[in-house]
Image 1: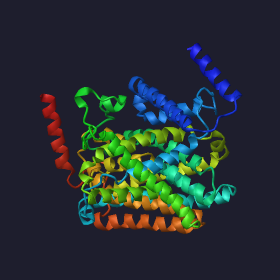
Image 2 (image 1 turned 60 degrees about the vertical axis):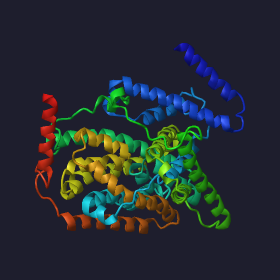
Image 3 (image 1 turned 30 degrees about the horizontal axis):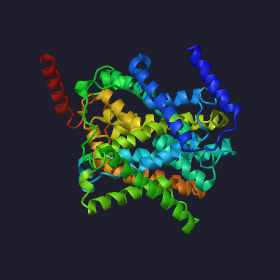
Image 4 (image 1 turned 60 degrees about the horizontal axis):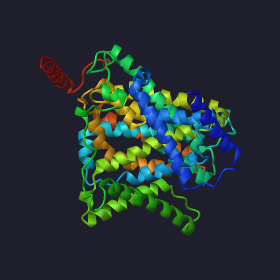
Length: 491
C-alpha cells in the first residue's frame, strides 16, 4: 500500500511540476477512466461493506466523494483535469436527449386523472411547491440576512433537491449563461448531494417512525431489502434482460444503434443552441431543453420512417441511467469546498427549509389527502423530492416489498404528463429568475401548488382519522398480500 501511495504522490508531483498541457480528447478520456475506477471501487464497497449496504448509498455518490477527497482539493492523488466541473451540464444535455426517444405509447390525460388522480396532483404539487416556496422563502430571508448572495441562490435548493444532480446542472448552467453566475452549478451540486443523503438517511428515520405508529400496511418493523438491493449485485437466477436486440449485429451493433440516436439528439440540442446565439443573441434557451426537443423530433422522424418499432425504450433508459451515474459522480467530485464554506450559512438555512417541507409533505399533506396507502405513497414522494426517483423506489420497496400499493404503477402512468411539466419548470423558471422576476415567479409556482392541493381536496376529501386507520380498498389488498405470503412460507 505504501508503494501505491508513493507512486500516486510522484504522479501528482510530476503533474504539478510540468506546465499543464492543452486540454484534449485524451484528457477527457482519462477523466472518465479515473471516475470509472472510482465507480468500480464504490460498487465493490457496496457489495462487501455492511455499513454502506445498510445506508443504501448509491455507488455514484460514493465515487463522487472519493473523487472529491482524492483530487487536488484534498489529497491530490488523482490527476483529474480542471474541466470536470463542466461535465455535469454536458452529461445532462445527453440525459435530456434520451428522455423521449423510444416513447411510442400514447396516454389519455382523462384516464390518468380518473385512475391515478391524487398520484398525479400530489406528485406534481410537491415539485411546484418546493420551487415556489423555496424561491419566496429563500428570496425573502436570504436577501435580508445575506445581501451579498446571488438573487437566484434560493432557486438552487429545489434544483438540487427535487431535481437531483441533473436538474442542478441544467438550471445552474442556464443561470451561468443568462445571469453570469459562475458558482450556480457548484451550489446546485452541493444541494443535490445533501439532498441524496437527506433522502436515504431521513427516509429510514421516517420509516421507523411510521412503523411504530402502525402507519405502514405491509411491514410491522423495518424490513430488509433483498440482498441484491443491498449489495447491488443481482444473483444469476434474478437477472433480467437489458433489452431487445432490435437491429442485426451484422449491420450495426444494437447498443451502437441506440447510443447514436441519443447522441444525434444531443447534437441537435447543441447546434440549435449555437444557432440561437447567432440568430437571436438576446434569447438564451437552455441547451438541455433543446436536446430534449431534438429527441422528440427524432422520435417523430423515426415513426414516420417506420423505424420507431426498432427502438427499445429499456435500452435508451439504461443509457440515460448510465449517464446519470457519471453525472452524479462528477457533480460531487467537482464541488469546490471553498465555495461551500463561503456560503455555509445560506446553504444550511435553505437545507433546513427544504427538509421541513419534505417531512411536512409526508405527515400532513400525504397523510390527509392520499385516498389509500398514504405512507407508502408519501415516502416515495419524500425519496424523489429530496433525492432522485431511484431513492424513492428504494424507500418504497422497504415498506412495500412487492409494490402491492400500486404506488409505482400509478406514478409511472402519471409521469407521462408530469415529465412534460417538469421540462417546462426546469427550462423556464431559471430564465424568469435570471431576468429579475424572482418573486413573481415564486408566487405563480406557489399558487399552482395550492391549486393542485385544493383540487385533490375537492376530488378526494380530507382524511381526519388516525395514522393507522385503513382507507378505501386497503383491506382487500393487505388480505391478499398476507395470503400470498403465507402460501409461499408453506411451500
